[in-house]
Image 1 (cartoon, one colour):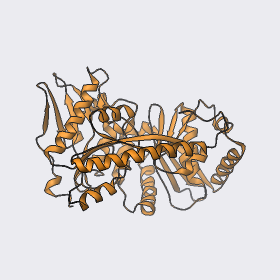
Image 2 (spheres, helix red, strand yellow):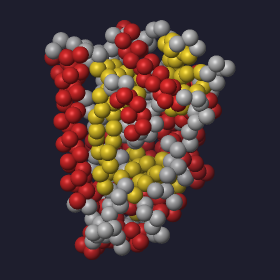
Image 3 (cartoon, one colour):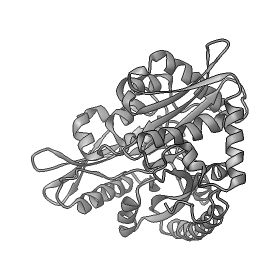
Image 4 (cartoon, one colour):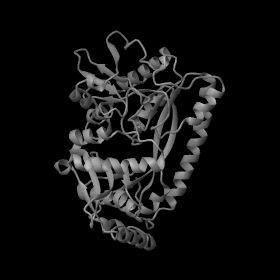
Length: 407
């Protein structure tokens, strides 16, 4: 489907009434809402739902016209016009950049004669990170009602535009439970996260591992740091446009190898550095001989977690990926008192490096009853399989008996 297909245009009406005094409005541009008002609902804990990050995606052209991600953000003002709840929302005509895969659903629906796309997606684009998706001011009265109002508005928009479905991906368990209570289907996934158990330093963490695993990690770090590449973690005022230009090349190199099409523009990284430098921990590797940047790993800093996002290198360096993306992230979390490192989607190889399975969630509203019933059976069976898989994988972790984090 073309991005200019008439069915992909903004649904109408622009306001979805809720009772006599509450209205949910739809914004096609995040800059139509004041950043401070949005962030009063988003909070400080998760950097990805803040206005600066989401607007950087739009202002850089990473989402918007021609990308298949059309902003349809929801905002609820109180009686005096103060925003009390918001939700990042997109009208989509594909399933790229989501990390909760529904391609098989789309194929099945369309083979049966339906039209799966466009659909509504409550998400942070290109970001498989758990966080709030139904954003409510902490001082707002009846926050549960406001969360339900946001979800009801998503369904109303889908119904009025005759869309196949609504999907909210990587919500918190609290948001997921609200959606399930309103009839959304619950899907469970898994990622691998490292938990900081109050370690004093990296050696303190190593001491909790079985001897063989401890030796393996030490050897990996020795090899990674033996390539003549010096790694440095940059944040805040230490970040410059020069760093972002170099990192964008690393990002492109990974995109070329893994999925063939870069989602993020170079402007996105420059804007991120301008607006959120204090939330960035950028690991940059410099070749000792040439003085040139040769690799990098991008992390964002939350209130209690470090979120690994993108990695790239201009050449192959054995084990350097593990060092830059996993071990340096753990060092940073220990030094800054962060409880978690979330190192991105997929990757069972992370288990032996201390990253254990953690549940992730998504919720789905399907318009067509027969298709909904089929998807409900699928996610129920899948959920049981994922839970069994998580338990089995956790048992293969590197920790000594009695030292495994409980999560």
